[in-house]
Image (cartoon, rainbow, N blue to C red; front, top):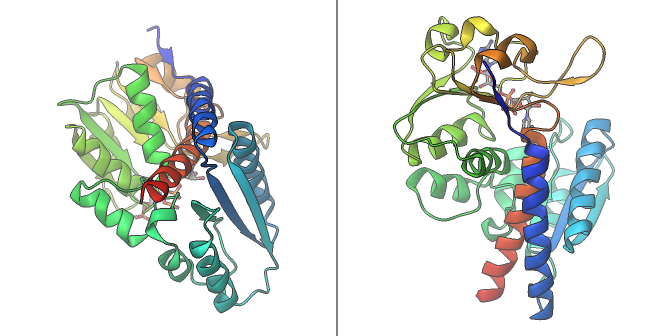
Length: 284
Ligand code: NDP
């Protein structure tokens, strides 16, 4: 079966271009959106993610500030820095790159980020708003997947979506957004008995687990749409998803690659959230 390769890289580029134009206009009106990224320690993966976020900000015209902190920093000092950024009028988005060192409780750090500057959409206030369907800042990865589906013309109304993974940053908010778009949603996780039983009934599978090749052809109904969130290293050390792409892709009607699928969308939506946050703060 011929399948559509959903080009997240291209869609993300379009979104970044739209944002660039919007930021030019905002700057002309006197508003330059600003993003502060806090990086604690020097985890190599975090360094790469942060670099990507700063690069995207610069390209769009968002003022970015990278705040590096030693991994021996105390939780209280980190909280003070976040509070300082909450008050900074030039900063509209605050992102604390996870993971944090073991002696720091990430929940405590996220809790002090002002919900209006919470461009990751992780604070209890923004999560709560998402659940009750109020406007807030949405978590970037599920938001990016919704945009990708929308811009690819994949309708969700009445479809059966099976989300595999129930983390606070991906699986759980994904399930909520999909049901708000009128899909019927099943949420699977590590205690699900007989995962293929559920995924085989899906019109749309979202794999957000972090296990290389977990989703095989046995998991997929012919014609399904498959979105692969996973970021794993394969035996050759290359980035690869949760889906066994080679055997699954021919069964699908559309599928995202890894890399070049969900990853670039996540960064694009971080940029979109920063611009939205700046506009909302400015309007107040
Ligand atoms: P977490 O580790 O927080 O959550 C993984 C989820 O998968 C859990 O809910 C877990 O279940 C479930 N799970 C584990 N094993 C199985 C299994 N065998 N069958 C079914 N479900 C299982 O991961 P994240 O949600 O943070 O990330 C998931 C993946 O997505 C990772 O590879 C991560 O790197 C990637 N990622 C990619 C992003 C991107 O932009 N492309 C952004 C964010 C994440 P339980 O709750 O029972 O433990």
